[in-house]
Amino acid sequence: MDERRLTAELSALGVGAGGFLLVHSSLRAVGPVAGGGAAVLRALRAALGPDGTLVAPTFTAHNSDTSPAYREAVRGMTAGQQAAHRAAMEPYDARTMASYGVGVLPELVRTAPGAVRSAHPQTSFAALGPYAEKVVAGHRRDNHLGEDSPLARLYELDARILLLGAGFAACSAFHLAEYRVPAPPRRTYRCVVRDRAGVRRWWAYQDVDLADGDFDALGADLERSGAVAVRTGRVGAAECRLLGLADAVDFAREWLGTNRRVVGP
Image (spheres, rainbow, N blue to C red):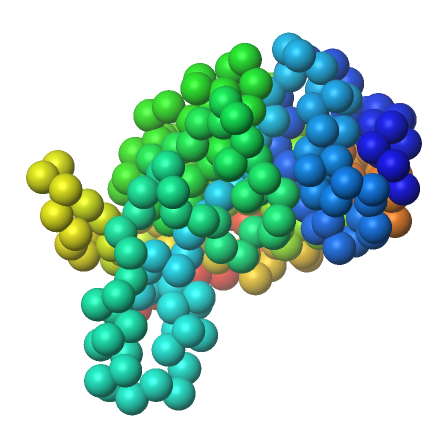
């Protein structure tokens, strides 16, 4: 598979010039590509053209001790080992901290010349293109994926979602819908940051209790319903979907209100 063919397949799927594209990806699903992940990124940018803006999640769950990533990291450790692990955890730095658990492509976006990244210490996004700063600016540190996050900006900007070999379980836009259901449950999160004086410290904050365990079921119902236009096709060896972000969020808001049960205290 070469870069030119990837660009052609992305275009055939519906990735056209201009606009905003949020990509969730599995390069393993795409299969071998001459030039590797860098060629996939170039193909995406070529399909979007010079006026298009590419966005990818650059999450850093390993920066928190309230995340599944942390619990997995310390599984089997003694109390002393856990304390040493916490003491060694680096504070978030948008310029240097690698993303975690979101695949290869987001790291390529994050480290590409001209990329900008949002400020949230756990759920940042990186963007490339003429309107990249517009997408990532104003991401409040106490608002993971809600109204003060890049997802809300992408909703307003009529962005599209590309699931490039990834399933609906990876569709971060569904989280915006969690903020838009009535009275969403909230919980405490903790992560490592630097304060204004540059001192490393732990920071705790309240935000919506996010969950993605039912996103596959949500996505399956979205496709079956026909309420949201979903274009499907192959890019390389990967099964792909392309859909409107606002339509996906609106469907998810209604679906979550009907199908997700919240168990009270």
